[in-house]
Image 1 (cartoon, rainbow, N blue to C red):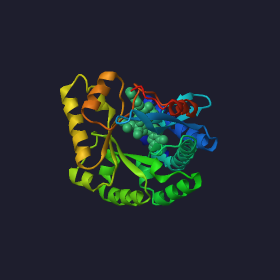
Image 2: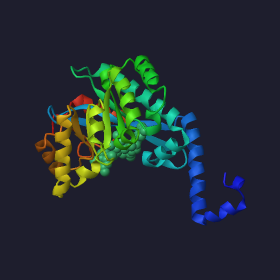
Image 3: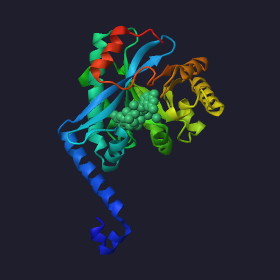
Image 4: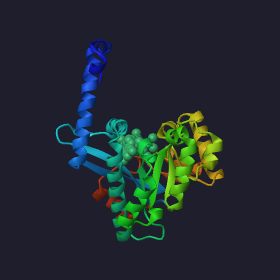
Length: 283
Ligand code: C2E
Ligand code: MG
Ligand code: MG
Ligand code: MG
């Protein structure tokens, strides 16, 4: 594209930038092939309810097994997929695979409270005109109990598109699925919008949890978010819980759910099943 604008455009790139651009184009190309060749796999991270001390669900996190370059982190390829629009087909695949898996587990491990799967939606995916229809189709095809699906949308995406987001979230809610605001605390929420979002959960960003046991300012922020969630009729979930001190504080603050390396890293489906088999009561 730079070429079309004339030779002079090259001068704004130094050698390393050209290298970066080349890498980016390669990544885009590989991503396209990766989707065709089904190189993606879902990992699952347990979500623990602090009231019952049991695993009540999982967050689905996508992984890319690149044939030559090995494992590539979603933090690296999701932004490129988003930029190029490839997130749309990839996103439908992720949603379908997650729903199919959780429907199987719901049948295999029946409980009064159906097991939940949380699926991340990128900004572009969330704003797809046919989002609701696609989700309806996927729920029907996989036979998932609708309350078993939870969608995570980041605070910055919902707040940057607040008016559209209110309408979209309301439509999603009528399907009976659960909604969560991800990375909460990092995205400049407007309280008046937050009140209008029909969401079930605020997911406190891990940057606040990280220092909750050493930094009283972070602790007060988390306390405030939990209180705010409850006064809005929502649950609070903490991500990135890594040690027992953090867990103890979150219990004291009356946080509802926790997720993090203290319990488990994201694991493959076989490993995830072992959590369901032992219904862990250890925490
Ligand atoms: P996220 O949705 O906030 O996911 C949580 C990230 O924190 C995951 O990184 C998870 O592995 C990591 N994590 C969990 N517990 C801990 C902990 O105790 N300590 C630390 N340091 N980290 C922890 P991951 O899997 O690399 O994903 C990164 C981001 O990529 C996700 O952030 C999400 O924004 C995006 N992503 C991942 N999978 C998908 C997907 O299927 N669709 C979309 N649209 N985005 C995805
Ligand atoms: Mg998430
Ligand atoms: Mg998160
Ligand atoms: Mg986060």
